[in-house]
Each structure stands twice: as C-alpha cells, then as structure tokens.
Image (cartoon, rainbow, N blue to C red; front, side):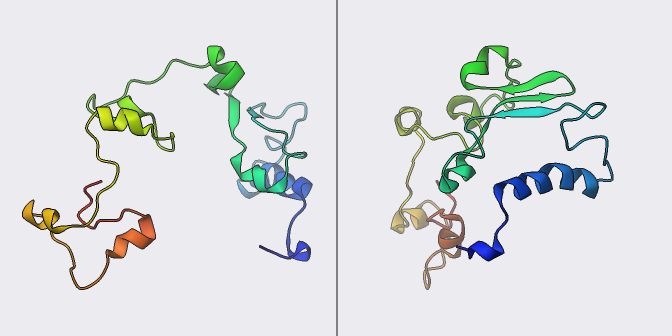
Length: 153
C-alpha cells in the first residue's frame, strides 16, 4: 500500500512500539526494553514477528501475556497456565454462549440458540414496528456492515 521508502523496517517499528512508547509516557529506563532493572512484562506471540510474511503480521496474537510477574492471558500451548475466566455478567449475555468480542462466530451454535445471523431489510421490519429510511439504503450498512438500520441482527 505504501512505497518502500515510506515504510518502517520491522526492527524500527518494534523499537518505536516498545522503547518509543516508554519515552512517550515518560518512563524511559523503567520499561520498553529487556534490560536489568526494567519492568519485565512480556508477551509470547503466536508467530515469529521477524520471519513471518509481511501480510501475516497483522494476524499475530499473544499466546501468553505476563504483567507484574503474573500470567494474565494464556492460550494455545500455554492455556493450562492461564488465569480462570471471569464470570460473564449479566448472565444472559450472548458473550457467555458465543465467546468474547472478536471471537469467531459459530453459526451452528447461533442457530441452535435462536440468534438470527442475517437480517434482510424487508417489509417485515415495518410490521414489527421498526423504522427505516425507505428513500435510501441504510446509512449504517456500508459503514458498520450491519445491513439493516433497525439493528435487528
């Protein structure tokens, strides 16, 4: 998307994300590098940042995160070390059934639970008391991908 001359190297991007962030928060020498006397919060990543193809960098996730010497997140091969899950409140929240934000949606579970996955804009919305702008497509459909302005998704 950008010419090579207008992009950072992986090394420079990582340095700016770690040491640059500590400078920006006025915490130079306290965090931002693996060095004696600095905070040792860390994340173990799902792929090797320096060797994965460039298009896969955005898909790298933390499989283990340690903050203040305590494991605060663990998945994959580290899942057994992870902290217990927090209870989902309120109890009726769909998150308890389908997973947290960003979790992949299992369409079979959603269908069994009675959740509609697609909501075509139709006359039925009006019959149910939902109001649409009939002179134009939903202004939210293109921006948020919701499809129907009545937010029945």
